[in-house]
Picture 1 (cartoon, one colour):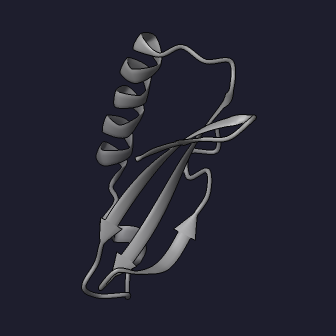
Picture 2 (tube, one colour; picture 1 turned 90 degrees about the vertical axis):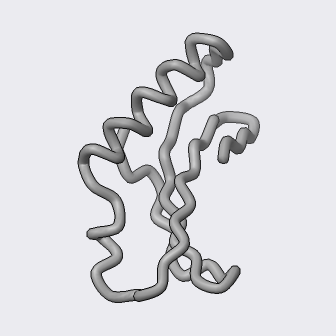
Amino acid sequence: MIVEDNNSRIFVEVKDVDNTQDLHNYISPKKISTILKTILFFNQRHPTEKQLRVDLVFVKQNTILHHYENITNQ
């Protein structure tokens, strides 16, 4: 999902989880790398001067469990 406000373009990775333990294991460094490559590709086609951010949201049964902002610290 891609969301924009006045200052930021936010790429949101949404993960549907069954278990709330070990949430940090649901997204691997390889997955983050793939997300970053996708963002680069998207931004080449749709340039912006806005700040870029990657958020991670965990949901379970349509309820947001955790929302982590700026998981790549970029």
